[in-house]
Length: 322
Image (cartoon, helix red, strand yellow):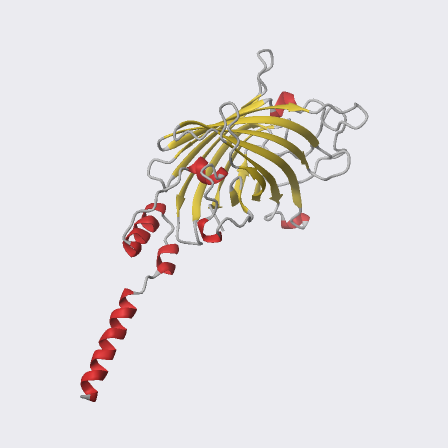
């Protein structure tokens, strides 16, 4: 009798262990479709996959389901580490008001970091104003650093670091497709350096977001706050970094992503701009990491190069979440 009870107990324990949901196994899957299918199998129900713009700006008010509405830091722009090669390094940065005295022996190969995060600091969920149904207020921050890692002869200096804090108001339309949001933002961007390498500007911008199936579009235009000639380190920055930009994202299978960024000064007499093409695909190196390739050409890859024309190829890792 005791042997029979022991055998039954062992069978029940084995069955319970086999039936226990393995949530960690699902969470470790890098591809969105595989991860959702795993959750579906464990729960017996389908999770509605949120669209990229809805997820990025919490347009459905769900926030992060795991945190039950608790505010937290979340990704804003791409977070990445990449090795880049430029066709022409900017060894002697200059602007109409300042010029570096002597060229610096920078190398064309360097390491590029970008960290970008935002957090919701307030909201009004039932706005019902004109075309808009809700409002959210965000604080955002983006940092880009360019490290001459391979330039050991010059002690591998950091060539440039840009800092951009922002305050962003998001107006959601409530539409399932088409026009999804309007962002109104205040942005300060600078490199925190002294003359002759100091660069900075302040902007007020408006950005619209549209979504159609497996792609979405962002269009942004801005107005620069004027500065007096005595303190303006880059008075012609809009002639190079432009007055507007257009960003298109395409995810043909919800895992791979192709992004095209185009920026323009909107000048017919002296047109200048910047083009950047990105492609990323999941890899099993780190949680939600993506292998990324980037090709960029034009003016303004960063602030110190705002008036410098170059073509850049980069490869590395992009992190979609943390």
